[in-house]
Image 1 (tube, rainbow, N blue to C red):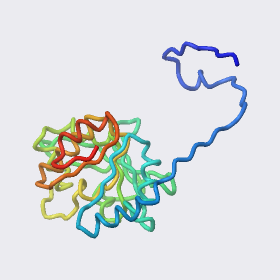
Image 2: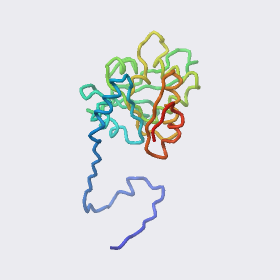
Image 3: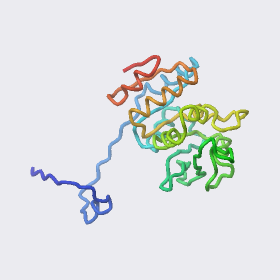
Image 4: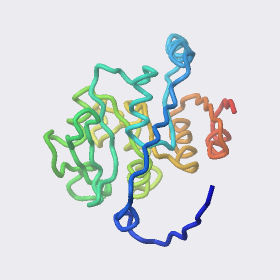
Length: 222
């Protein structure tokens, strides 16, 4: 067997993947463990809410969350990610269509609208997304964009209350059951956000990239 090492620079993916000959296709499948569903159901019966935080792609995380019943299979599931134009776009995982896109602005903005509608099939911005009753998945880029554009106090207002209207029951953080493409520091920030809401947080992690979140949690299993 002959092994050839190829140096890869910063070329665009399109140029690297051009003029190739397809020799075969390898499909890898990593199924959820049989005990996952009953374990999560036991947690729910004990009034413990399971939340998935992973480094995997949003669509992968959404699929696994549905298989494990972290998300309701019968409900629509929207993935919040940062689009190429810098807006937070919400995409229906079943249809691939953007249902809404919002731009995050400062609370000091004279219009006093924290999340403004940009485009999409839903009218009313993120409020409309929440009113649909859809399950939510937020990527690390979405999580950090909102966090970086607001100071610490404003950030927790966004994720604890969802909107400036404190009378609303829409709580983004409490509605989102899946966090995808989350690097180690963002996992830790998520745990800290829940702790700020006075929740007792347990974290189960199996890798070195979970260390920060494990340390930030009240209870951890490694």
